[in-house]
Image (cartoon, rainbow, N blue to C red; front, side, top):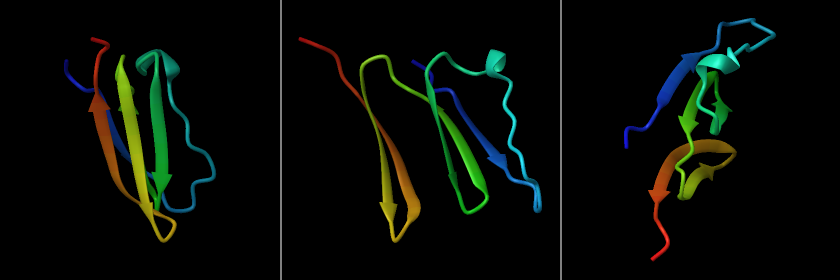
Length: 68
């Protein structure tokens, strides 16, 4: 399964961030840290871990699984 990922850059001095929800996956997560915005589609089965260190996002890890 292909992972839908998209990265955005915040414009300096911008006060709004707008997304067209018609172009987004039905279930996703949006993470903002230090002016960088990342959107990742959530797996149908599994976990998406967001690892932080000293208040900053260091890693976004996707772990998929299925019932046996």
